[in-house]
View 1 (tube, one colour):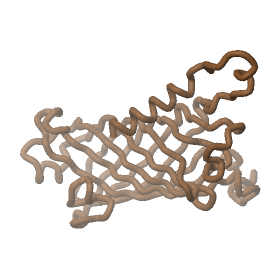
View 2 (cartoon, helix red, strand yellow):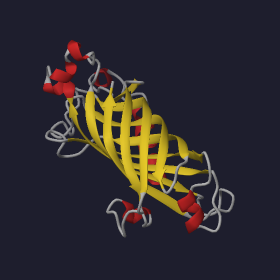
View 3 (cartoon, one colour):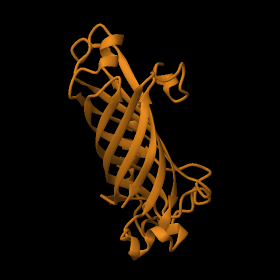
View 4 (cartoon, one colour):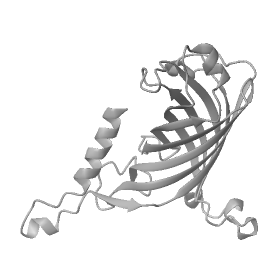
Length: 239
């Protein structure tokens, strides 16, 4: 994850560098990137279950889900900045979305309620990096994101207490996410954009697949060396 974030930061820094050409040639060389700040907000509604496997297995539900363990999550997300390719640049134009969005950074706060074996509430705060460019973007609007932050549980999670020798209410939080969605602006007028539904500012609806990961980061948090994962799915509404 650190390598991916470093690459995104380097690309963003390069986009802000001034042109090095002088003379008439400099006026003919547009900056390849431009930045938009705070372009949108979103609200996500998700549901899932604690998985029994390690992080790498959680996407595939191996070796399975914990019996009688359910999870409801409400997430508010603010896009902090996004980097776009200049419309005058033809590089990658064949595969980029119409708005030529490349990647961005986001801040999120989500509140999760556990049901079944566990009944505690979690509050999670994090920063995310999101990548938007895929070769199938003309047909399917997709993004992937990774986030890093903190997770606070209102009480010691019972499943964590059963699995680990030590656990803690405050742990490290990581998020891995894929989204698949519809760009409502690109579709033109739809029932969801009708003023009769009072949702004229709704930009997009995405199907979300997310791994919710709490861990002690190899003992950094109160000696906790274990981790827990929740595979959850839902919808995101972007405004």
